[in-house]
Length: 87
Picture 1 (cartoon, rainbow, N blue to C red):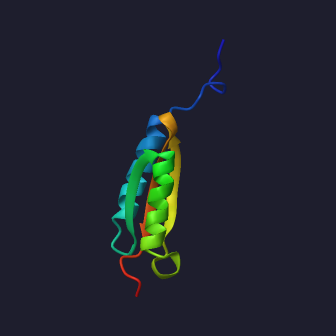
Picture 2: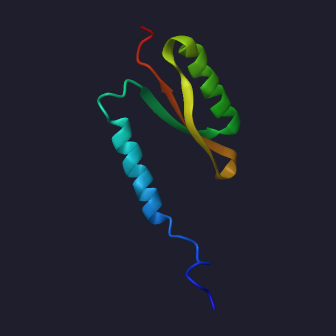
């Protein structure tokens, strides 16, 4: 007999809340950052991140990998964030 305490929580609601929160957060007018999300094989993901850091230096553009996660087949989904200008 399985009790309610042993059951895994449903994740659909959590996923929906995360999507909604990320969508509204990224559209806020006060947020000056530009973001781009990629889903690439591991080696290509590293090369793309290096390309962003070379093209938009961290000191000037505040460039960073904002989030990342591993996908099946050794792929990485990640979001790069930077300021639009170096001013």
